[in-house]
Length: 304
Image (cartoon, rainbow, N blue to C red; front, side):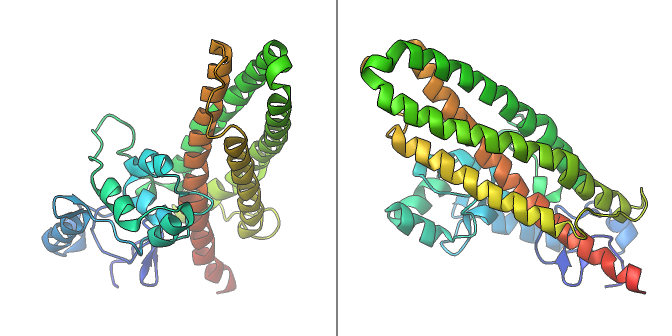
C-alpha cells in the first residue's frame, strides 16, 4: 500500500494482530480519512457487521479463546465461570476447549453470545489490542504487577492465620495449600522482577524506536523473543499451580466449619487467580506477539 502506516507488516497490522485494514477501528489512522484519501464508511460498516450476530456476539467454534477475549474483553468472567482457559491455553479453539472441559459446545456458544456488552465505565471497554505497546506495558506494571504483590502478601497473612486456627481438623489440606502457594509466590516474585528489569524495558524501547521517539534498542539476549519465551514458560507454570490449588480446594469450596478468615483466604486466592488470568492474557496474547512483530519490522533496516 502507498499510505505507509508505521504498523503495517506486509498484509498484517502490528497493532491489531489481524489483516491490514486502512482506517478501520484500531488503525492509527482511524477517523483520519482526510489524510488517507480513502473512503472509510464501508470499512467501518464491515466492522459493525462482524461484531454482532443475530442480536448477540459473533462467536464461532473455530475462534480461539485468546482471540475471543482480545475481541470481547468483557467475556473473561464468563469464560472463567465455564472453566475455559483463555491465557496459557488460549491457543485452543472454543470447540476444543469445550471438549476438554466436558461441556456441550452449543451450551458454551449460547452462554457466551448471551453476555451483554460492557458499559463504557467498566474498564473492559479499553481495546488493548489497539493500544500502544508502551501504554499496555505500563498498564500491566501499574495494575497487575502492583496487585499481584499486594495480594500475595495478603494471602500469606491469611494462610498463616487459618493454619493456626484450623490445623487440628484441616491440617493436611492447609499444609498442601500453603506449600503450593509458597511455590507460586516464589515463582511470581522472581517473574515480576525479570519482567520489570529486563523484558518490559526492552519492549518499551522497541516501541519508542518504532514511533520515532528513541534510539535503536539493544535488547538483552539478542532478541526480545528470547526472554518472552522464558516468561511464557513461567506463565504455564503459574497456570498449573493455580489449577492445582483449585483442584485441592474442590473449586474453593469452604469446609462446613470455616470461619470468616478461612472464607477470606479462599476469596483472595480466587481473586489472584482471576487477575493472573487477565495479566497473562494481556502478555501472552497481545503484548508479547506484538513486540516480536515490532522487532522483526525494524530488523531489515539494520541490514540495509
